[in-house]
Length: 224
Image (cartoon, rainbow, N blue to C red):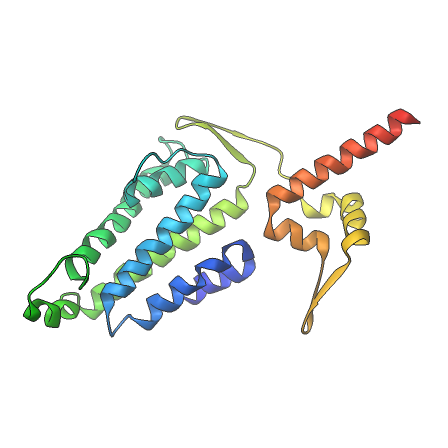
């Protein structure tokens, strides 16, 4: 759990996932059906965000299995790539989480009282740990792969291309310009300049602003 928390702390775009983590931890022993439900929602949220950013069509009411597979493709892993083959197996974990949730959740279907009493004992501790640990591994991988492969553009399920990834340290002129306008932000003992925050929180916006900055410079030069 700590590795996922650290990953989210590193890439603050994903901070809205923290309530899922709290619920996964908080209900692990008392009501595992809620842990499973939030683990499934965690994976779906990450995968859907990746697909949304890469404009991948998910269709109507896609299964978690399908969403996870498309997220891997959106990250630039072709169908022939070993990682994408592995993703099929990992996606099955998501599917099994959904199946397990339906089996042990008290609200998925009406159940006799004795089944409600016993539902939390259907999954032993070792199996619980395996399911949740597997989920967290997939979650961390998806987030890190997205953040580290922002330059990948999906053309189709079979074709991807690499575009130039802008490095923060290579954009000093723009960074100085942006920081002169918006300054520095202090949070307790921590301090970050505006350009660094924009780069790490919303890379797409950083790209757009750099493009606008360069175009503005070119207009000034042409007028001269």
